[in-house]
Length: 546
Image 1 (tube, rainbow, N blue to C red):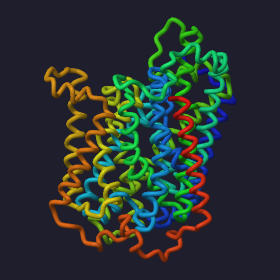
Image 2 (cartoon, helix red, strand yellow; image 1 turned 60 degrees about the vertical axis):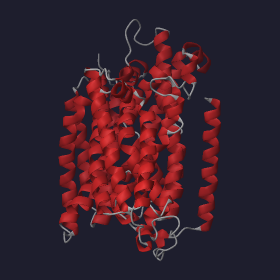
Image 3 (tube, rainbow, N blue to C red; image 1 turned 45 degrees about the horizontal axis):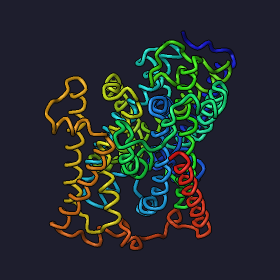
Image 4 (cartoon, rainbow, N blue to C red; image 1 turned 90 degrees about the vertical axis):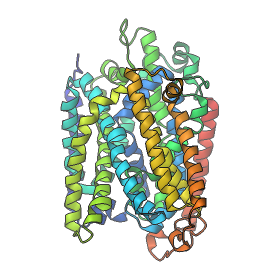
């Protein structure tokens, strides 16, 4: 049974697509240089930066995955959302000044300046692969779940359609089109998500009725150490390891702050996004608990099994009246297209500036932009082949996403963070850490896939494979830090020229004559006050839902 869309539903979706295409093609007429195409000319204001950071992160796998995990496990998965607010503050206050002062286009480029070209090649390659494993394919799979439920389309039909639609305005308009469509998409996805949560809570009978029909432990953000999905020992540390990689070093996120007018606007954007990241617990995870209560009361799929990945589509199908259905479907499409566009543009930036330009240093601006557009098409084609394998690891889509990120993020987070804090970290140490971490993470990933279909009996391998992915991420991060320190101490010290402007100790040893690198004292105080308020809000929320 598919949704019965009314005229108003179709009108809302049509208006959404018209707005997106209008923005995309407007900027398609404006783009000229590689800086304009890949970084929107570095003139984006703080509000657009913040909205873009949020929209590029929130996709259909958040709607599908967070509500599904909320239904199965409760609010604990929201720790990844609130820890993201902390990581966004770290991005703004710790990483942004170094990124903007160095004038880099990509994160691999920054890593090359801090260490060596081998580090740049590693991060470029891993980032592109990570987009396929944890971003584009998961976005498409989640969208497939939604459109199959509400429209009756199979996963490949919906995937190809959405890739083509998103690709048109992304390839045509570049970073400017991506950021300003994400600004609109932020409002649409928030309105749609809030509408479904409000209607669902009303259908349950209010908050008190929700509490009576949902297990008490579902409202706890911290689970026992024995919890298979979200043990408190993992939740208090691992999200920050994954978060530093994702929010502070991943190209698809950091590219938004690189496009900011200056450091002040970049910081303000990260703080704004930090406030926005508080919301998903209440508008994406909470609907999972609402679905649990409705199912228990026989008001949602009575007498039938409700699977985690089906929670959000089923709520859209059975709870929403005409008009709201179109609004929520538009919000889901907005979330998907924003994230896909971010991946497409960032991947093309990496493939163009970190790969193509390395081999063709004399390439013209036009050649760089054209290669970026072609590389996007290739990446999408490869991503579509991965979609059927996404469900192998976990029935809960968001857990799959976080687990894969937990395998690849620790060594990358280590070399960036330690590299800024400790001048003695050198290129040989970074190389050893990156490749050792890659091998260990890949080994865990492969063994876990095998274990799902053919369980291991060897005690050591079984323990390694069945260890919670957050505990594994913590161990891998500790190993990475240890290796970076040991190898760096045992080998030659980096020259000061290599460290100028790239570590805290030598942060001032860099030319700051360009306007976009200079901070305004008054704006800095405003950002500091807003950051403190955000920190207090998070602390209060964690105490309430402890």
